[in-house]
Length: 417
Image (cartoon, rainbow, N blue to C red; front, side):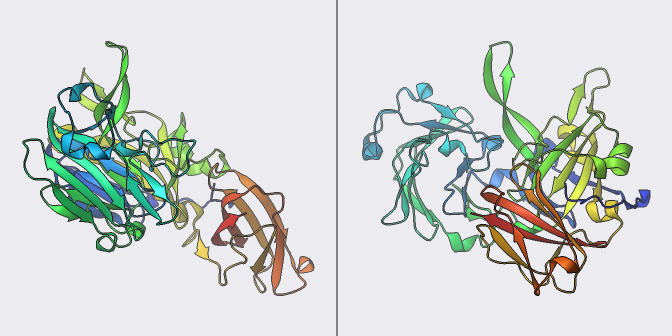
């Protein structure tokens, strides 16, 4: 956890009660900042697909909640664009977005894991640094085929060129999702009728996304997994979450600093199942004794859900406590006065901490949430303005380095070779 063993100073009035509203039949999606509240509200029906702005990820996701399904053409290559036989399209493979992995959209579900250059819908060309589309698809809307679809190429600058043709035989159209049109965002969005859109706000202005999406669930009647529409919460790519099960909300406030457990980089640790429908009262109830620890490089919080009004309003109410309130300090994480180096590092990492002693340093693995290094630095350990921290025993990966002086905590993202 990010609390570093501080003795918490708790005040009940620091609990923030807030809510988001998705509207009738969940027509809107809400992007939410732990620190600042609602960041942006967007119409979920505006967009049809999204494409990552991180060029090496190449994730393509479809808006299933709007009514879209994705079928992949199984009978040939992109050379068949002008002669696709769609007579048996209902038998083609059906794909949905992953609700756990942020990099696996519906278009990425057939990645060849043995080929690091394969992204399912296309293959990376190491010479041109482009991802060249090698697959054809059918976009099905509310059970009826709507468009033939071809992701043609992702250019070196991140632009995505797509080609689509209405199922009625209208002329094919080409469009480009421009990287520069969605600055500082995780995804660029596109609607067949609206073109490119900015559905989500800038990266640093949101942490959680409240909306309707499709979740694979087990259908016991038909003995198969089926994607169902659910209303829930997905995490931004920079967020780590740990569910706290079987502990009261008061316990979470009073004792969480002594609790240990791994956080997860995933879309789904919060998800949709913090609520359930109670047929006797004809209303939604909250799962008792469940809360969530949410952390990023700049902010952390405890959250629990207290009410859900269903499709009549789409209102979701919750209680939130920021980590700075749990600790009783103004901010739990402040950038180091001077960045340590080198970053990435191999074995020795130099920390410019002269004048900030004694100092406790801890290193947390961002993939597992586990502490891998802890050390107290005093004047006796320092022979220059830089302290040489030896991380030779630490495996390669991404880490968060914390340095604590009294009640002040500094942090820095660290990459280990």
